[in-house]
Length: 367
Ligand SMILES: Cc1ncc(COP(=O)(O)O)c(C=O)c1O
Image (tube, rainbow, N blue to C red; front, side, top):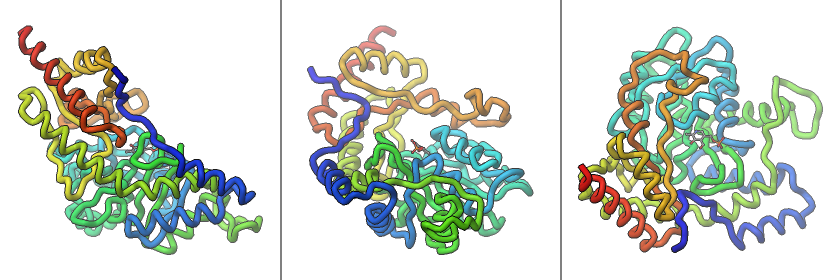
């Protein structure tokens, strides 16, 4: 029987055609195709400006630099997210301050964020994990009240909204990732979006050595080389045409998994509003003591799955951070990502769910 991986990239003829077109144009560094891609991206999320960069880790650092955040500043980050959220803050020279997540949304707990604000806090970085959002209204009110920036790490949230507003467009800057497992990919890549022209111009300068103007070697600010390429843009342009279909397919897949697993007592499904969220990875929570054996069992049946992220404060680079993170620790120990590639058929999903049901039948039988 064919193996079902947890996630696989999906590129095809359309990407090949766009790549050939770009190569034949004789221009492969960041130029017209990147502009085209940025325009499409900005239109899709409903933002005025978009700027493509190397990846979704650097884009976080670039966003912070554009906001003037660096050494001596603090940025509040949820303790349960991909480690890149916190690393992006470090890369900008600032210090991430970790807070617990809300047990319902698995996103940053707004009250915990408020309690963590100090005189050094310059920004809060909400992470709409798997397309679900924290209380964005509450967060925006808090940020305004305390004069703090919001930089959203929307790496996983392309195609997901909160109250109809695309995630990544709530705060001053939003940051997306185009790495291989994302809903669309350019191999590697990141995109910053903003409605603020001044911030956009700073982002454009930071990613091009701080140049005053393109192709002129007068450097107005400290900048680097974080530019995209038209090769990546070619892939992105083809992928953008598939985006809406994939966003909807992810929702259908989540719905089907939910239907097929809802009566398994040992499984906790995370509340998900499919009108707004398009879960990038299909996720479930199981009893911590069964998690690793379920992953091994599925692997033996030719099905790939992955454990959730570790809570950030439990890993060596951040073990110096003290705090109280019961929700983050709980979900980190219990979560599994199930097969989530959009080319999976309904039959593939039924097979995965049958095997999970079988696992829990035999596990509970042994007790
Ligand atoms: C929440 C989050 N932030 C940041 C990143 C980093 O993005 P990239 O891999 O493009 O650097 C990821 C990547 O998976 C992510 O999931």
